[in-house]
Each structure stands twice: as structure tokens, then as C-alpha cells.
Image (tube, rainbow, N blue to C red; front, side, top):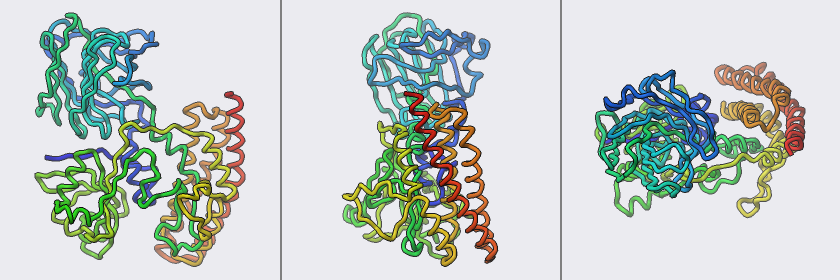
Length: 531
């Protein structure tokens, strides 16, 4: 048996592994593409192969006309589809979704492989539906896949205008094969990992008219609930005055951590299991991880990379570093790992169960973290919080200083633009490595992402975007150049490069003190206009 949880490798933030892991869990490398779902292997029963197919939005308020799909070419000729925001929810009596469908009379069936669903939220859906009519409160039978922890589900509305019933079927990773089949007054449901490996799930009573609507239903309750959080946060920075004081001397000031690096993220549920507890329970750690993955958990665990293939330290030297496990293959006895492979590239690799057990840091001080996206929780973009954090950033203030019950004041830490001054000091006095300058680059990259995000959602006008984009783009480019210059300096000490890097950092600080106040003013003016 094998299971692999989905990950995204086109991360926003890669400087530290916990940021990279969060991006890998929450984001989707297809997020900028127009489609919401990609599919293949569409199979129809012979009686339905010549049908005309239509595409429309099913909604309580929709009056969109039926559109013949690809000039009457059947659904089997398509490989992707997109949808606007909407939902087929077990909590609502009216549906709002995109439907690619045909009408059938009598018995019929349709099969499909869902190759990928854009991870815009845990309740994005794509699957097969029989529907009595195209009204928003029609009775239906729906088997569908989700892009995250909710896996494959079944939903039914037994009578018009009733609240639907939801049932979880299985956890599974893409591709996911689905089949729905009408036989007289019943509907049979199937699912599996491939078209040749379909399992019967259940038979559902579905007494209806002879004429039914059959097809692919897709919906996404939000355009991207995860980007709402990224765009609202990751504005503030902090650093220690002396970079030797901490293993993470500079980072995003995203709020107080508890005793792990994931607790600040409102979209994740994190559980910690201590090794001593595992020992007392006398359970196999491999079985524990397999069961946790089956429940939709990603595993963060510290390993000695001397024993981990495709790591820089492999069979060279001992290095304790965290890795994330996102899958397993019990037949071949391997785990799927996500982490920094050779060349410091964030990517996939495998480790055998035997190598994994050798790499374990098995003492009472270490823990295993189980990380899982919240099943229902979402996050709304908060423009007021953005303005406050931007203001704190240019005034070098701690945005979370009011949270005195969670942490003590630390006089050895600085915030906002003051980070530049201590970064310069530490570049002169310490060999700081590439991470601090990579984080500065990612900070500027996220600011451009935030501007694009606000433009797409009409939170700033096109004129405002065109005013602000060039200076912030030049900041990102300068930060990237500075990072590359420091890489050259690491390879061969060069005092001239250090002077150029310092000059660049001074320039970045000055440019931000010039342009961030203008951004704050623009956001305030845009808010007044919209009100």
C-alpha cells in the first residue's frame, strides 16, 4: 500500500525549512493557471457517447445561458475546466458551481480521472454528479475529490430544497478515478487510484424522472484562502543584534511561536508527540507515521542526514536537520521526504525504512510534529492589519509588542527597517551565511506578490499599481543581486563585494523609507474612495 499527500515545490519562502514546509502544504504550483481542475480518461457508456454537452454556472442567482462545450465536442475531448467562486456545500440548501453536463434518459454511467485540483482551499471540489434538474436546490448524487485533507467524499440531496448529507469515503492523492452509474432507481458509486482499479463504494437510492443531468461538477469556495493569509502577513522582520545569539538570527515577525515553528499559522493544526511517550507506549514509530499520513498528517521530524540519501551530508558527516515526510510505500518500505536535497534545492527524495530508523534522533528531548490543514478554517485578507504592519515596519516597531502575556521583551532584538543596520554590522563582523540575505530577497518578493494580490481584488487601482510596482520591483531586483554578490563572497573572500553589499543594503532601507509611506497613503486613499 502507498499514500502520498500533495505538496507544492514552487514555494514563496525557502530560507528556513519550516516556512518552506508550510508553503509546500498550503500552496499550489498551478495557482496562477486559469483552470481549477485537470482531468483525463473520461469514459461514457455507449448510449451517451454521441450526446451534446453543455457548460453553465448552477446558482440561485445565475441566469447564464447554456453553452455548448467546444462546439458540441464531448467532455471526453477536454482536459481541464475552471470555475468562479462558489460551493456545493452540505450546509446550504442552494448550490453554486460550474457544471459540464449532458442529459440522459434511462440507465447511464460516466467515469473520470481527476489529475489535479487547484488547492485554493480544503473544500475545493471536483467530481461526478447526477442531478434531477439545473435549479440550484435540485436533488442530486455527487462523488468528488478535494485537493487536501478531506480526500474523496460523497454528498446527496434526497429531495429538492433539503440540506445535503455528506459522507467521507477515503484519503487519497492524485490521480483519483471516479465512476457514477445509474441503474433504474439506484446510483452506484466507485472510486480508486486508477481507472483499472475502481472499488465499489455504495449503492444509493435515487428515485427520479427518467431524464437526468449527468456530468462534471466543480467549485471553489474562495479564489485562494491561503494567499489571503500570506498577503496579510509576512510584512514585518526581526533580527538579533548579534547573529551568533540564535540559530535563526533573522526572520519574518509573523507573531509569537509557542514551542514549535508552526503554531503561528492559523491554517494548520499541529500536534506534538514526544519520543519518550512513543517509547512508553511500545509502538513502532514507522507504524505511527504511516497511520498519521493515512489520517492526512504531514510529519516534521529531525533526522541525522548522514543516513539520508540525496542530502549534502549523506555518508560524509553528521548533520541534524528537520525533514518533512509526506508519503510512504509499505511494499517497497520507503518514505517520501520533502527537504533540501543536494545543491540546497528544496525537493522530493526517498528514504528506506531501514535508513530512516538509523537517522532517527531517538532521545527524550526530541518530538515528532503532525501537521494537517484545518478542515474548515479559512483566513480573510485584512487590509487594516497590512497598513498597521507597514507603519510599524518603517518605524522599526514590534507589531506584536502588546502580546506581553505570550513572551518577554527582548532588548537584543530589533524590528522593521532597523534590521538593515544590524545586518550590516554582522556582515562585517561575522560569516553569516546566505540565509539572511535570501530572507531579505524573499521579503521583497512577497511585497510584489501582495501588490499583485491587491490589484487582482480591486483593493488598489490600476493607476496605483503602475505607480508602486516599478520601485518595489527594483527593490526586489536589488535584493536578488545583493544575495548573489554575497554568494560570490562566500566562495572567495572579497572586501570590495562586501562594500557593495553594504551600499546596497543602505540603499534598500532608504528606498523603503521613501516608498512604503506612499503605499500606506495609497491604501488609505483607496479605502476612502471605496467607502
